[in-house]
Length: 229
Image (tube, rainbow, N blue to C red; front, side, top):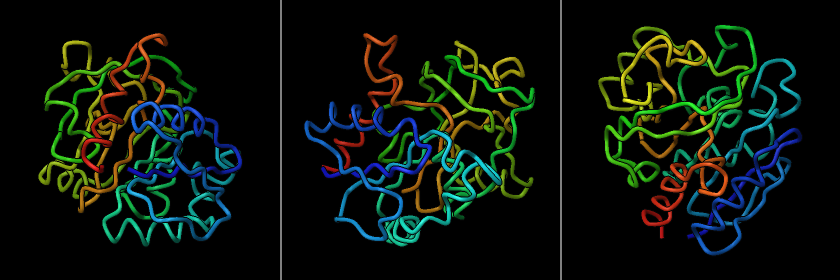
């Protein structure tokens, strides 16, 4: 398996994803600067978290116009898997690869803590390492993680099994108290129609080593290697 990590000015999780991918793949991923309009063929493209362009204008909006995004959109449309985490999720919505938008957290505060997720869809390359219904503990770290879409889009996501993860409590139960940012329907991650693009706000790359407090995220990267090798 060959993977790429896209690096924008303001990315701060690109090295974390690099380490997680290296542990699972056994080799280094490519680190691709955002101004590169072409790069080698890869089996997986990751768009990391951080504050691309300082979140000026709107989180992810400026990064979505970077030269590299034209290539990512073209490859995604051909079926290459693309994983966007946190700011990467914002970039994928701003670029039109995923529907909806990420707004300011309901409390209008930056949130950094461990939360619980329930796996809703495990029939993808990203989630095949889990069982549907598994409850994961994974960190979040964002100010603009409040997922919004119109009712028709939300219904389409639900009806086509494209909600990948949902915020819950530790028992896997949905509740207002377990929704850290106000996301509609407790949505924490979604898929595109082709199921080869995943955007999620929580950070699996920060939960990929038991020495750092948990390895629920490592199962995602191990599953990707198994699916794409």
